[in-house]
Image 1 (cartoon, rainbow, N blue to C red):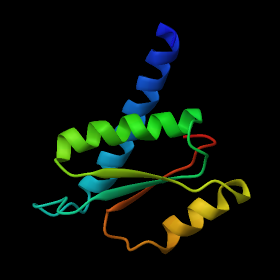
Image 2: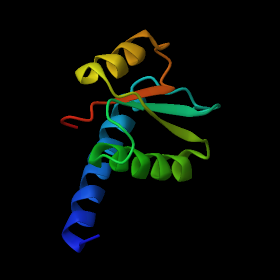
Image 3: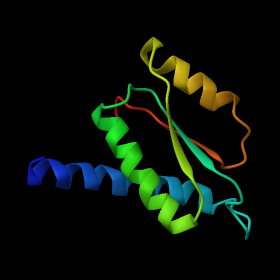
Amino acid sequence: MRSMTKKLIWGFAGAALGQSVAALAQQKPADYPTRPIRIIISVAPGAAADMVARMTSEILQKAWGQHVIVDSRPGGGGTVASGIAARAEPDGYTLYQNGFGL
C-alpha cells in the first residue's frame, strides 16, 4: 500500500475515533466499557470504509481493553445498516459508520 494511501486511511481512522470518543464521553459511565462494542458499517468487507472501521476497532480495543467487532451490513444504499443501528439499545455499545461518507 502506498504511503499516501496509508496516511489517508490513518487520518480517517483518527477522525472516526475522535468522533466516537467525543460522542461517548457525554454519557460514559466510570466503568465503560464492560462488554464488547460493535461498529456497524454499511459497506462490504474490503471497502475503504471497512478498512477504516477495522483500524479504528484495533485502536479502541487497545485503549479500552474490550473487543470491538466490525459488523458489515451492506445493502439498500445503507438502509440495512442504519436500520440495525437505529434499533440498537442506546447504551454506547453500538457505533454506526456510514461507509459512503464517513
